[in-house]
Length: 229
Length: 274
Image (cartoon, rainbow over all chains, first blue to last red):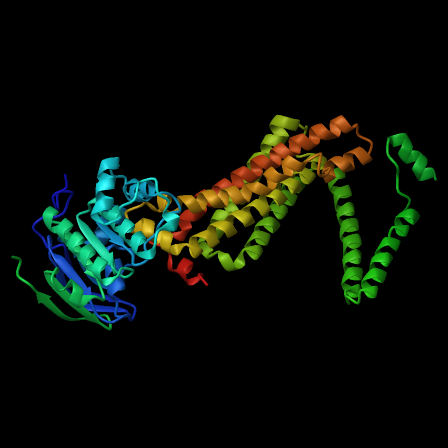
């Protein structure tokens, strides 16, 4: 199950509303809204605060000032672990454990106390991310790009309400990057999930986003909306 | 000669002061060898042998008085001083790797592990009367506290260095919705294992690789080997129990101090990363 908003909060509310959010000299956001069921791309130069913004949404970092509403509720009033189970984040450098593919896929559901997926579902997800390897294959021989796709498969198997992805295509070549963008956005659209994705590849991602947020020196420079259609 | 005969009547060989003085010739030998090697550590060695002599004589006087008094409050006071000194030593040895929030956990783990094991040793295994008899209490407490101190130092160091060096892994688990307990589990497990390994290895080699000091001392003082061995086994069990409890507590409760109320890795932990 898991239609968006079914596990608490106001399903009609925006996924996130940020007002006056400040964090050291890294982030200084006056106002930003991120809609539910939409694909939002966060772009901008390196060191501009994109990753810190994602960390604030995942509550891995707490802002020094301001308010972040998650589905209409102040984020600090929610249990951080419960919030992270609904708003799952994937870091730019994926954490891959020295074990086989199956264990690496299961760890996301184990850590977040979700029901474990069946082997068939895991194999199908591996194929979907273009990792045509058996579940008992060792992760030691995976390339950087393969590790990134494995980590993506892990979070997609968790099927959270909101996915925060930090540069999910950083280790991928151009062609694979396009495939991965298509795969993630298809996955989120077919389930009406919210995706917030930080990327350097603005041009490559241009065909996929609904909202483009440009951040420079911690400030929102502009927000471009594209009508769903 | 008279002393030797008296000692033999008591079941052990007394060392005459004159002959003990001859033992210092071995230090002279060491000094000569060091000089030949041009190590320049002559003064350090002289000071070390002097300190060893003075410190042991002072302890000898203290123990002589303490043993003759057999007062509860004196025994407890000495125990508290030993505990305090051990905790202070732990703080000093892991200074760069701990932050204030962890200090209380270290102190309480040390106190709980050593007191519990010492009580079990005195009341259940040896059943010494009175339980605060300093002849038993102080040497046993010293061995238990010393070993727990080493276990805690290793456990805290491993926990701290593991969490800091693999911060991505720790935060990667939190991002997925892991509780702090689950995220830290592999680091806690490794730290506990590292903390108890010295005492496990010690038990493995005991009697084959080396004869423990306490047992050797008892045998030299005339106690039958099997009786000395029974004591040694009992003390090793007490030490193992104390180390296990202390290291378990310090890793189990210590890992929580690496996170704040929002289940985030504390800034002090990331700041210590270098």
